[in-house]
Amino acid sequence: MSGTDKTIYKTCREAAGYTQERAAELLNLSVRHLARIEAGEMIPSDDIAYSMVVLYDSQYLAVQHLRSASQLAAAILPPVEQTTLQAATIRLFNSFSRWADKRRDKQLLEIAEDGQIDETERPIFDEIVRELGELVKDFYELRLASQDVERSE
Image (tube, rainbow, N blue to C red):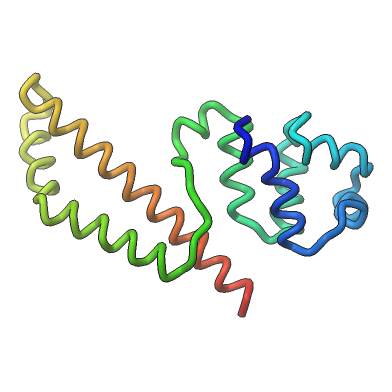
């Protein structure tokens, strides 16, 4: 786990306003067990992580846990940051606008038309896929920000 992942469980607990003792009690864990998770000595099972997500009301924790606990999830889920609804919305809109301004949709259709990616098409295809990955990341950040807003209402 990276340095930020080691403390994500503690960070989310504190953000939710729970003491370690109270969270351990509600999660049906010993304080020592929770302390080891929060210190990065162990990764909690998915069941415990799910209970934390529910208790702490943190979808961000869910994403970070999956990325930490599974190579497969880390390969599929982009790294995300917590941000405001306004910042996430602007970032997603701007990323999509830049993508559309480059006419990437047309380029992708042209590449896919014959069902093959030749050596001249490969560089632009790889660039388009990378840009789409950024759009996915921006989408997840917007989704997480919107859930933060729902919780605060």
